[in-house]
Image (cartoon, rainbow, N blue to C red; front, side, top):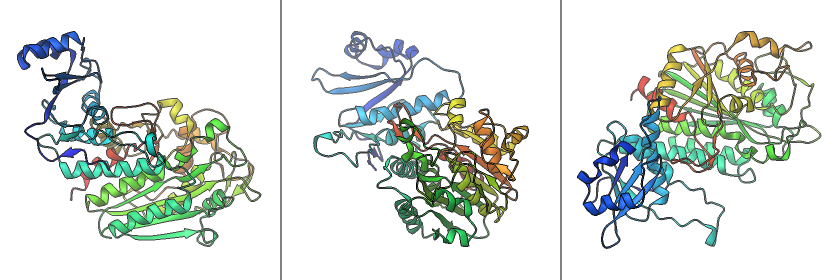
Length: 470
C-alpha cells in the first residue's frame, strides 16, 4: 500500500481547492490578483475533474484547483465529487498537500479516494516500464477517521490485487494460500475440503465444475468471532479461470476471465474489513475455489448433477458454472441459519446489460436491509441497485428430466433467473442477499484505474458497522 496520506497538515503543504464553476467568481477574494489572472489565462472552467496548478512568481506550486463540475442534484453526486480527489494522488508532482475546503461530512471519502487513486498494480513490470511514482502526500482532513480509512483502503487493495493477478499465479492453490494468509492474520479457524473429499463431504457440484482442472477444486472455510454473537456468512464465487468448459467461450470473452474469482476476492476483502474493525459478529467465509477447464472428465451440457441440497440440476450450459458452485456453498451455509447470508459473484453478463459495469444489482427479500444498502451505497459512492426476485420467472428454469435447470430456457432476465436459481438453496437464513458484481473498472475513474475493483463491500461494511457497532 502506498502510504501517501499524512496524519496532520504540514506548514509548507500546498492548498487544494475544490471548486464548482459558480465558485470562480469568488477567486479574487481568496487569491492574490496574479493567481486569479493565471486562472483566467488558463481558461480554467472548474469542470468535473479539471485540475490546475497555480504557480507563484518563482514557478513553484502555490495552490491546486480541482473542478467539481456544475452543481448536481442527483442522489450520490456529493459523494462522487468528494471522490474526485483521487486522481490527484497519481497526477500531482511530489509535495505535501492539504484540502483547503473539504466539504463537511466528506472528510473520510476524500481521504479514502486519495489513497485509492494512488493504487498501481505493477507486479509484472520491470525497468523503464514501471511507472514513475511522484508520491505526493495529503494531510488527512480534520475529523477524518484515519485508522478506519487506512484499513478500508488496505482491504480494497487486497481485493484489487487478487483480481488483477493472472491465473498462472492465482489458481485454486494460490487462492487458498491467500485465504489462509488472511486467516493467519486474524487468527481464524480455517479449513479446506479438497478434491474427491468434496464428494465424501457432499459438495458434488463444486467437484463437478472443477474436476477437469489440473488444480483440484476445493471449498475454503474460515470462522472467526464469538459463537454467541450475530452470525454473518459470506460466500464468494472463486472461479479462478473460466474457459466456459465444453461450451467454450470466444477468445475475446475468455481474455478477462482471470477476474471470475472477483466474488471471492470481494468477500475476502469484506471479511478483512469486519475483522480489522473487530465487529462483534460470528463471521464465516466460504469460497468454492475452482478452475472451469476442458478435459475428458469435464462436466457436459445435458448432465444431471446432484447437489448438497438434494435438488437434481440439469446442466443447460457449462459456461454458467458459477451458480453451481455457489449453490452447494450456499446450501452448506444455510444449514447454520446465519442471521445474514451474503453471496457475491461475477455471475451474469445480463447484469451488465441491465445496469452497466458500475452499478451492481443485488437481490433480497428484506426490505429494510435493501433500503440500508441503497442509502449507504449512494452516500459512499459504492452504489448498488436492488433488483426483483420475480418468482413467475422461476418457470424459465424448468426441466423435464430433473428438479431444475440451472439456466433459463430463453434469453430474458438472465440476472434475475440466476438469483432465483440460487434462492432454491437458501431457506433457513433470516436475511439472504445476492450481489451480481462486475469486480472491475472498465474506464479510468478518479479513484481507480482500469482493472480489478472492490464493489459493494464498502457499502456492506458500513451497514454492518451501523448494525453491529463494536
